[in-house]
Image 1 (cartoon, rainbow, N blue to C red):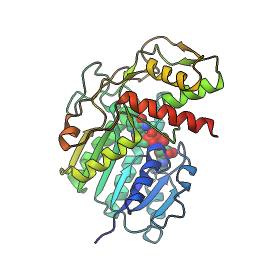
Image 2 (image 1 turned 180 degrees about the vertical axis):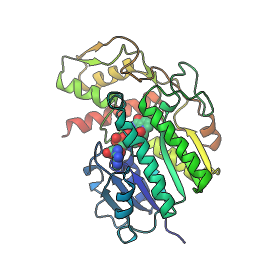
Image 3 (image 1 turned 90 degrees about the horizontal axis):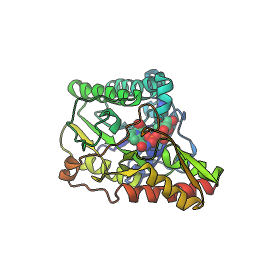
Length: 324
Ligand SMILES: NC(=O)c1ccc[n+]([C@@H]2O[C@H](COP(=O)([O-])OP(=O)(O)OC[C@H]3O[C@@H](n4cnc5c(N)ncnc54)[C@H](O)[C@@H]3O)[C@@H](O)[C@H]2O)c1
């Protein structure tokens, strides 16, 4: 029987490093690559002695580097599937410099597909995003809603990546799973609203600022549920090209509620200072919620809704930040 060996790009990031642990627990081989621009080697250091694990500091947008480093003698076996998690996860950074999204979000997809074609790896699973849809305001978003008009470079490069993957399925891949994540929370946290607010509140216990007026309302998913959902889709979807919104089907949680949860857990006496307007930054989608009928029909339901996921993550992130 062929051994399963996963290649995870962005494997030293928040979601990628959690995925490493889950796949090793399944007894599979795991090769993680990351250029450490936003991830940290320490997130996967605990697996370094694991016989089924390899880590390489490598730029996923450099197909020549992928080809020269990921040689059979260095791997626990031939790679059988790729989890493409590498991307620019900092949306405002991509507003200031769109080259970041081009390189880390799109060209990583382009290079990984080129590498897969050469190496004969048949399956890709891709971390896409709600950002590909653009701003549908209060309309619950289902997978076939259109037109797709992303309002950030990040969303544009994720959408372009989906298109590249779809074309690769037509030409040479056996299967692709497109996972459209909402906001994903948990630890090790490196970015996102919760860690920003926790750090601000710890630094200045008197009060902290929130980007925007606090009315932004979005869907949040805990990383544990995300991993369960992706593995469920991997095991149960039967198509060659599978596109799934992954989230709970609730209305989401507001920035005000998140700020209050951080304050209550960190320093209940803190003031919260709100900004103006319902966008935290250029390219921020102020409201979104998902229709998750496709995922439910497949038989998966997340264990936590948005509010519960946020509360759990606030607790985990406060512990992360206060135990340093
Ligand atoms: N966290 C979320 O809320 C969320 C929401 C939607 C989609 N996603 C997607 O999920 C994936 C993982 O996100 P995350 O939250 O773990 O972010 P993250 O920044 O922690 O992880 C991304 C990793 O990719 C690495 N990376 C970036 N460019 C690279 C390159 N050129 N070569 C090699 N490595 C590179 C970074 O160093 C980082 O470790 C990303 O594709 C992200 O766009 C995340």
